[in-house]
Length: 290
Image 1 (cartoon, rainbow, N blue to C red):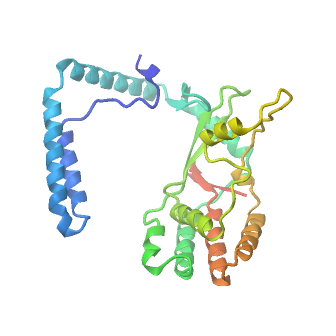
Image 2 (image 1 turned 90 degrees about the vertical axis):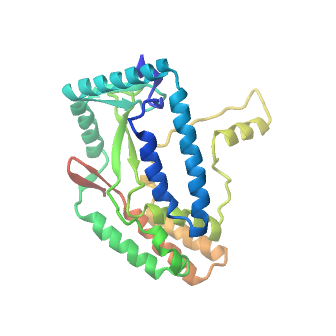
Image 3 (image 1 turned 180 degrees about the vertical axis):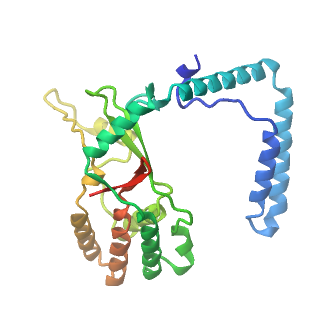
């Protein structure tokens, strides 16, 4: 069954004339590099386009039939979901697929909203975008004048939220997943993370980068039959970080590392702005955390 392949399955079906469309898109991208490099890039693109045409013509018929059948099944699933006002979602843990009614999903979102002190706040995105532009223009000790454009989102949008259902918990609540990539302060926050590592390097004494590091650290520990490992679950970690205390800690770290007052002030200004982006849209309203 097609659903057994999971949400990460990449279907091989492609629309007609997809190679021609790819060639047009590649030609548009070719105009971005310096003029002296464009002809060489065009030659490489033409070579790869010819290779794609050759592979498409040599592809067996049964492969094309299979891809068309998969696409047909996908369209049938979409029609059934639309008619029954249902949706497909990923489970909170694992790779399971969940089919639930849109109304049920909305109820779970509303329950999450009521339990997490969220209020309606409209018109924040434009105000925040203006504040970010003003802050970036003022902080030229941390952000070079020629790089200002890199940290301003020209077409900002309110972060979107979706919920993954926690099947392993009572009443199956949602795990909220928020997409911040189009948020007004996303690029600024990403830049600030790198700047903090540069100006006030923080040692990794109590955290790990990934599961590989965890396995390596556990292997290096002396094994003893009396050793006990404890696992703690953190609930809503990032929204619960006290903002004022975090700013105070960063100020002290700047002073400890001997940073100039101008750099310290610029870091604090850039730190305050991203912390104001505690909003996401739902049911035609922007929701803001108190």
